[in-house]
Image (cartoon, rainbow, N blue to C red; front, side):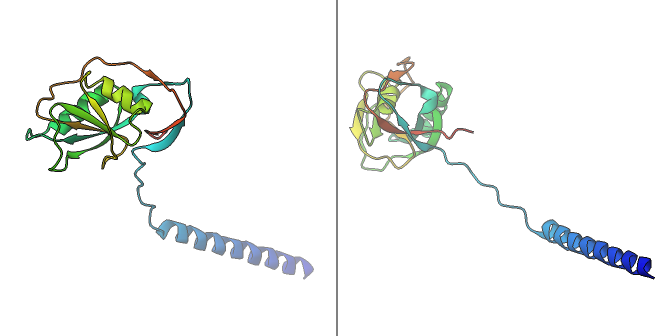
Amino acid sequence: MQQAARTSSILAGLAAVTALGALWGWSAMTEPFPGKTTPPKCVATIVSPGEKLFPAQVTVSVLNASERDGLAGRTMAELVDAGFAEGDTGNAPRDVRVARAAVWAPTPPGPDARLVASRLGPSTRVVDREGPGVGVTVVVGSEYTELVKGLPSVRVRSETEICSPPVA
């Protein structure tokens, strides 16, 4: 009789474990999938003096300050082809007047702004202004035609925070 009691208690324990496993499995199976998260277009990154900064480390947004449709999108495509990371595109505020191109950056002498400005031509002004997009903001006007060769990289002069694409 003792053997029968032991067998019954083992079977009851196994049945309880099976029932708990089934409940956990059902709960996990009926739970909704987690939502898709979109990674940020850029993250704040500190660059140190002496480092070289390359286009792939700089996120750029483009604003159209002209009446030409699609100029911001076309300019963004050129910048991405040149190695820069894609930020936002859109229209500049109505009161903004830019003939060819300007660079808006919160730290105008920053290496990221200098690198982007070098690709827009020697007459490009760097303005101490926060843009509505992420990263360095390029504002293109009606006289803008295309990117120029520019610098392949710039040397960082002082510790600076830039907006870089997230590392996957």
